[in-house]
Structure formats: structure tokens, C-alpha cells
Length: 142
Image (cartoon, rainbow, N blue to C red; front, side, top):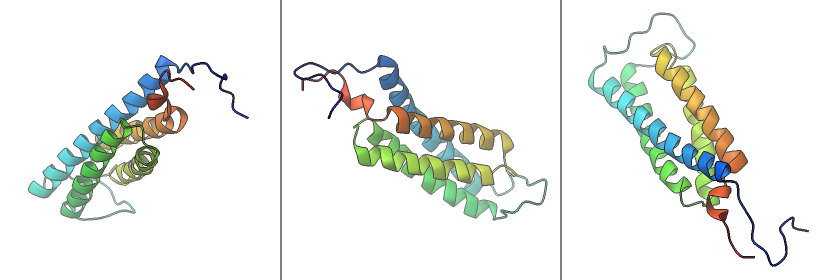
């Protein structure tokens, strides 16, 4: 049984659509931030300084390539969210989780960016899982 009215229209919350659109925009931002950080780490190894011993220790250049590739993929997935495709939301959630984990591992190199990206990643996962399908439902005839 469906909870949709028979022969009527389905009204979707404008707030839900807005939150899903915001998740897509945040994915664009995440991708752009990752690309920027990756490019800086590749070009200038000395820009990021590690102050403590951490479990995750990689060269700055390898972090740069990781961030650059992840940024491009997150940016493209953010564009896919606006299509409303299930695969785009699924990829978006997976990439946002990976982005949050990578940002957590990046904390010793740049704590402010790491915390910002973890926060945006968590919100993106929430918005895509709770309100993801609302962006395409709109007001449609059944």
C-alpha cells in the first residue's frame, strides 16, 4: 500500500527540496576545497606542517593527489545529485563518508579545514539520506 493519495498530487516540502539542493551545493564546495588543498599540497610540500605524531602519516604530495582526485569525484557527484538519480545520491553519500574520513585523517596537517570538511560531510550525508528523493518529486500527478 502506498501512502500517496489516489488520483491526487503529492506535495513535497520546499524545505526538503532546499536541503537536498544544499547538499548538492555543499558537494560542489567539498569538491572545490579538496581540489584546492590537493593542488597546494602537490605544488608546495612545505605549506602544510605536521606538529605531532599521528597514526596516519603520508607524504604531503601523496595527500595532495588523494585530495585532488577525491575533489574531482565529489564535484562530479554533486552535479549528479541535481538530476535526482538514485545512483547519484548513493555515490554522493559514499563519497561524503569517504570525504569525512579523509578529512579526519587530514586533521594533523590542517585542523581548521579538516573540521570544516568533516562537518559539511556529515550534513551532506544527512541531507541526501533523509531528503534525497524530494528534489525530483516536486508536485507530480499520480
